[in-house]
Length: 249
Image 1 (tube, rainbow, N blue to C red):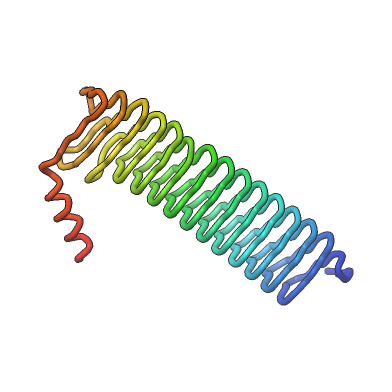
Image 2 (tube, helix red, strand yellow):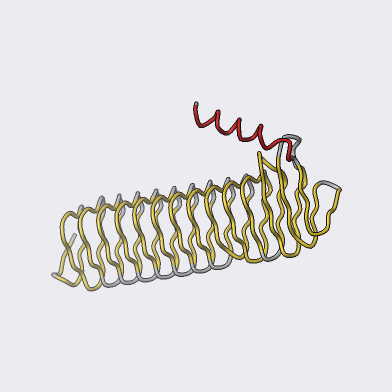
């Protein structure tokens, strides 16, 4: 363990206010306010306020407010407010408000508000509001509001989506999906409104669902419809009643 005032710090645990021009390494947990010019490494958990010029690495969980110039990596869970200039990776769950310049990787679930310049990958479920510059990929389920160019969901999708070119849902969709190109969903849960400038395709609509498709080419199962397709109007009252009953319970 060692320290050269305002140049670098190597310590077992950290608590309070610390300023280092080069780097800071903490063997266990870090709590407090840290200003680090280049690299901060925490081998335990990190909690507090951190301003790091280049790289912050946390081998445990990270909670608090972080501003990192280039890259932030968290091997556990993250919760808080984060601004990262280039890439952020969280191998656990991510919860909070995040602004990431280029790409964000979440190995677990993602919940909160995310603004990402280029691409976002979620290994679990995604819930909240996401604005992603190019592509969002979700291995689990997606719920909330999404604005991106390409969106791919391996599970189910619920909420409102605005997609520049393509939205692909391999599970069931519920909500509103607007795209400048093409919409695809394997199935429908309750109701689905699709607008696709080129077209929309639902593989299996479900007998108790309601749906509206608007686009040059619309398809449900093996049936195709030009410009507009509407189904399940008789199911609307039943869907309203069922959703109301769920909320009451």
